[in-house]
Image (cartoon, rainbow, N blue to C red; front, side, top):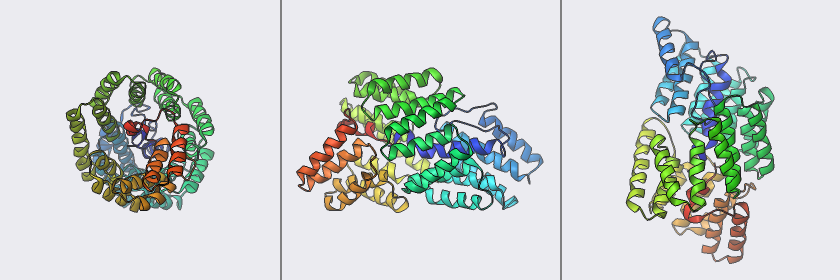
Length: 423
């Protein structure tokens, strides 16, 4: 799984809510990207009740239908409950039927499409909104997130820069940081996250920024700095979930398997999302608890039905699950399905690894090269490439790729590869 269930996807919901909220949602629905916390009262659920009451009196109010759509979308993000996605879609759709020029409902549809991993559809909605108005920051947040996942780094970077021009702040700076990180500019990514931290004014925003500063350190092998940033994140917002995951995986790589397992048990009890379940299962396997690992993977498999029923397309996760459970044919089938939808380095790596697991290394190598082409300091991608090269008998290339993996992250452990994944 990818860090925090893929950073850009979570950003896509909250940035739209943040930027559109002031004009379309009346400032009621707002949040911090990926934080799981809302910025202002009333909470999204209270807002849902209020908007529903308004619509019972004025069912033809397009603006309130749009507000309700964002409230459902934020509730889905904060609660990790995909059952709110169809409700959000219905609300935005009603707004657009009432007013075909409902610009903010189009942005909402784009954010919803990103949340469901329908990235090409998200671009379509954003472009439709852009024809009406091109000055709303959330529009470019939707575009940046969608283009990132589709593998169009140039378009993603341009959208993030335009967003920052319109509204410099946490949402735009974190996107620019992610763009820099994927280009291999760790120093630039860190500087932009520090700017985001300086612009943060709520506990949840500060915790979010601290978590990703921790992530940069963690994936560079600096566990001391990573742990410090995760701790500062929890100091900023004791209710934040992501820094708990950071603490848990840092404990694992420090060799404190007992502490890591205890932390993951608590974490997955609070937030049973695919990323955390896969990491927990991997640690349970490493500890010799195969039955416990199978139980977590069983929960993860069950989540697929829930997500699919609510319109979430995530074959990447299921490719990773199949690879982890000894189903190479399934890993390849799902990876190919994801590649048909989007062609970024994360999916290229998954497809390369699935092909390798099926003994098709000559086919895997071009995808491994795509995954490592951007300069991204991603030890897992380099490790996978080294395995493909070794299988093809190119020992020199394999040694170079493995050396690059170690240089990118000296603490990377192939036995705990889920902990090495970066979104």
